Image 1 (cartoon, rainbow, N blue to C red):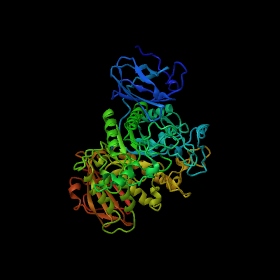
Image 2: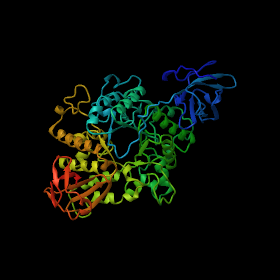
Image 3: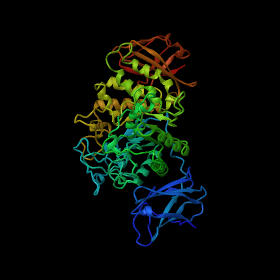
Image 4: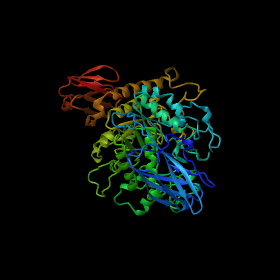
Length: 617
């Protein structure tokens, strides 16, 4: 059978023909030829479609099996597509006792563009933002007819109208900070009720559509292309633990066990540590894996093979369709861990240059490290296949480092202790480290709005091991809101909306404190972008003494010395104590002040400062 040369547009992707034809929905809406995997699951949904049998008469495309759901309105068709099959349309025939229907399915040609799916690593600094709260370029899509929640900027927990185009309009601002990657919180359709407040994007109601209040699928693809053209990578936020209760599945579940039973399990226990606890009870493990995150978020059952296949294909579809460079997987430790390992393995085998970071909000390095791949000494035999985890342990240590009790085992000692346990990880350089994020209080407010402490913490973030992530507004020392709720962590960027009294995207629109923070952040981050020593260097640190913490990053070609002085007064740094790292170096260039320090003998550093020195012979 010959393929049509005509590639039909998305809104006409599925055509139903024949006697008394009815509309059906097929997901994925299209696929590609010569994909890294030859298997393809088609979920076909339509009235009584389960009564039909599928057949395909196309060379190179083999129908492996078909399966109905508990609902009569689903048919799952599994295909094997030879790598030799060319791009184009092929026909699927559906036959029942009395009727026959056909629909055409499209295989697109894969792009030859190599500037995509690049992954991310310790050379990068990730800028995390919430599209709804960053900038609004198109007020016409703030409230969309037919969607449940209108925009209401007066409600701190409501939808405010930010969109993808708004982010795209400020890519130069993001790049000027020294950022190399952009992570958007989820942009999938979240057509949830106004009472729920789904501006955050974590309650998907259609996993193949961009929310129209953010833009369109085409606009998201164009956004990724614009980022790549500017040398910025894109990390896409995904959720496989749950969906929103307004997802179209919930009106007609494919199988009875598609989601877990809320009446039986209720909410999760929110204790991700259970997954790596060798003494965990079955009750606690079931509660974690099968309990719903909140009553509005049905918990997906990834042990249903149909669900698992659907979710893995959805990830591949977005990677191929948009060209994103990485995925951040929300609530990584909540689903069945065998599924998460399969998902990570299949995605990274299909896209070897790609990277994934799993959200692992747990207590303690051992629990955190459990989720990183190839961990030695795993007595349960588990391998997550995951390169990167969200290093909450660094966040906890930084949060506590600036408390005023500087005894021998508190304060800045927290930073020493957390790194001293890095042997827990298979590769801590892949850990994503951060001061705060969209689920945590604004770090500047956590520090009591102390600018010196803020700069010290940021300096540490940019010079220790790992992949730094910076939450939008941190570059302005953004404060926690005062109206209550999660909206206080997610306030709007001033100037992102037409009519705002000022714009923080330009220097004249920022306060003196905001410019001070901005200047520091942009200087240190841009320096880091060009520092191979920070990207790939080893780390040596010295036990903090007198509230002063000294560590070095080094390679055969370079060396950086970092001194965190928590005291109000300046501190004297002993050359002899640090001679193992200073031998052969007599000068240090201060990357913040542009001054050169004499390191040939004991030297002084100012108080309340993280001093970053590039060592010179």
